[in-house]
Length: 344
Ligand code: KG4
Ligand code: ZN
Image (cartoon, rainbow, N blue to C red; front, side, top):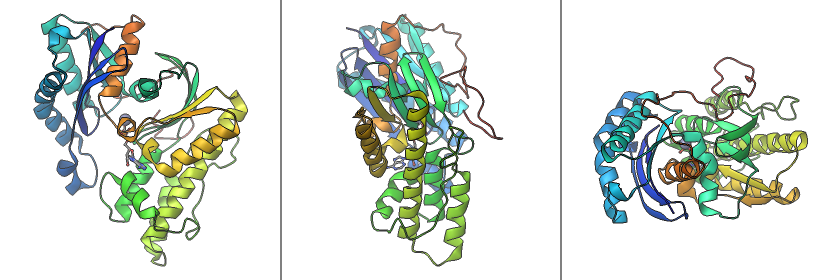
């Protein structure tokens, strides 16, 4: 049994966790920065980096304290090394390196996306490789075949915006504040999903990818039109996202075949209608569906510690000169999706 300290600081959550290779979460601490970013309606990278630098060390101390452990008890230190806002990533990675050096422990540089991708295995010991993963977060929207730690095949990605970005933009337009996903979902519960005609970009397209930029602009136009209730815009928008995700997932299964398991990960995976749709698609194809609890879908350090545990077990540790990466695809061999501004 090994004990891993996980550190996360790639966006606007500062987090530290202690997780064992036996799937025991001994501590997980999270400090959000909503109040700092709220006046700007989105994450400001400089503010985020400064906030991480202030809070991370006390947060790690608090996690060790809660677990009743010291650094000496830890077998390895896993820190997010990208992709993300580079200032924040550097704070977490440098902290991880310093602790690794001081305590003479191995460092594991974790890809934040791998943290999301492996997180369902932290809560489901029966989830074996390979599995089909719908990875939907603020920065990414991908379908992947997960074959093992460090082994991913990207089947689809977004050619413009991520699903979470579209949720956040819709929330901003409707004046709901940041982060938008949960607020749009709550408002949508009171709305009519058929009320506002909105596009489903790339629906039935021969290419495998996602696109949300056109949907985002259509939400702006619907709002400016003035004829629609905000709850109807929210519900119709959410339904459009559900329809796009379903269509692209069906295409991936049609093109590449099913797996025994379908899983969702990433912040947008906390969305209830999206989870219900994925469960239906899984049932239709005789796949077992795993959705991590909502707190594990959004950014946290337990998933980074767990990815660290998986990599540690596979003998994958990193040297202290590992450089932080603002971009870091899970599948480096994947063909570039068309379009300017492609993020993955
Ligand atoms: O994975 P995550 O915490 O951070 C990134 O790595 O990007 O994802 C954050 C994204 C945000 O865009 C947020 O609005 C969205 O996840 N999100 C949701 C929900 N909860 C969080 N989107 C839709 N419905 C939700 N319930
Ligand atoms: Zn994330």
